[in-house]
Length: 389
Image 1: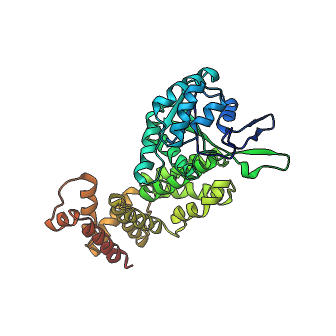
Image 2 (image 1 turned 90 degrees about the horizontal axis):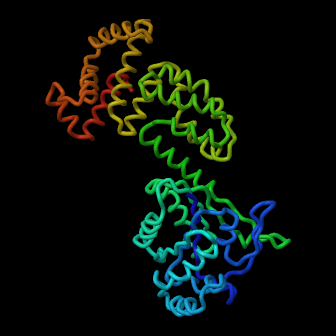
Image 3 (image 1 turned 45 degrees about the vertical axis):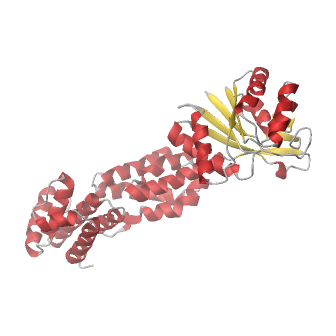
């Protein structure tokens, strides 16, 4: 089902229509001259349902009067609007008559003025009660109070996450951008939602290190899907403790990330390149040690301990000229190096305890794992001790 949510404000530029009449240009073949943008948008989108959103003081009276609604119902609305006392009962008959005229269900949703956090949250709760999971929404932010477009943007993201709806587009009839021939352009602001997707992806990456979240965003921004699939594949290899395959794949796809000129990809490109730059290290132990530090910063202590352990083993192989990609040689190198640097046993025990969720062998290790600050300090101490950093 498709639904249009349109905000109704308190404009009084014209005593008869409430808003200034404008010729809204949607595309080359469609324009409408109306005072209320939401009805022109309804005609353009042909939604299955229309939700009019306003406060107890919004211009319900002028809006419904212009739409030819029952005079007596409008008279009651006039007095209530003047006093900011419009309620659902007063809107019931006008809503029904407008629904019959448009041929689609019309809902009138009364919201608070969004004067503080409680009222702002209340608006989101109210909107969530009138949408259904899987519904496709368009939101019109042309009219309404000036601060409501900001809330509408938050509402779009909130409804997507909480109510499981798909917000297709945000629309704004930009009267202040009226052209010399008298046409008012219709702006599509859905790109703001795409920007929030990128911000979410950055936050997700900072939390868990999975840069695979950028793959669908880069694909939507114009990068070849085959290249974005490689980025997701590299993230998979890294998160399954295979830095060699991850680096090989990143090396292949990184030039595409650097060269990408999509509108949003270029906006976030430098940050993305910085976050996946670990593979530029000269040797495998450098990659693993960089990953250990990155995961510790994200408080992913199991991966931090695992990559530090693997970095120690890789260096032990390199010191002995063993093949660091050979499992048996890695095992041999680790056991030999362990005799020279006994502290690595502490790292091994911590890693095993974190991986298996069992009580460590020593009371000291138990105390370490019982306190996050102690665990962080211990990992940092082991890093300095084992790698002389």
